[in-house]
Length: 67
Ligand SMILES: [Cu+2]
View: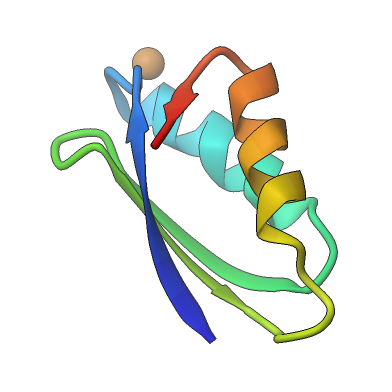
């Protein structure tokens, strides 16, 4: 499964790395491609193993705005 979240607040490659590491640490996530230029985070995950609410909350907890 693949989804794209709109995430505001990323300003550089460091922010992308933070988001990538944060999302990758969530269960069921297989790949993460953040783009600070487009304010998006593309996430590949295993259906039934990953929880998008958990992922969104993890990103928000790092100070970025999801949605
Ligand atoms: Cu940054």
